[in-house]
Image (cartoon, rainbow, N blue to C red; front, side, top):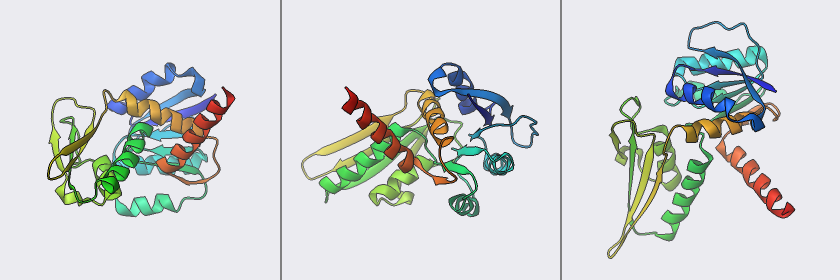
Length: 229
């Protein structure tokens, strides 16, 4: 069993992670400590998963290096200096993504292809999140915008209720309109994917990893399973 520390355990994502670890025995993960920013932990871990605050994420990164543990950071709105620092990491396996859902990653690839196929259509990108979300537009919306060559300042957004996250791309032509939408039904989408990434990350050599790396692994594994049928 790989031992994990969940950083930001009192947050909504942290709570989802705690609950889903117990429901995912196939991942062979076990919680050894729950942590909030500024807290000391005596437990050792193989993996630290962080969904907290920018300060908490930097603490989780330092703690992982101290423990020589793998580190998954899903916290958004991080300082640019810290982003560059993570990309240069070579002593521990470090994963960073503002959205850890494999489904959302594939949705981004779908949008990229759609914009190419419907070249000349007017594009619009809109996102919806819960009222507690502090950054607007979301990190995911910004990544999708960059992926399709859409200006971040033109992203529109809503903050309403407890919406887990919806992203819509609208392509408008002279005679028709195409809308592509991804809607997360609950935070469990992100928590379940984060745990799968963490289990994989713990087996990787030191270095910096993103969703592109995990997606390549997931597709390769799926193809291998298909070939065995």
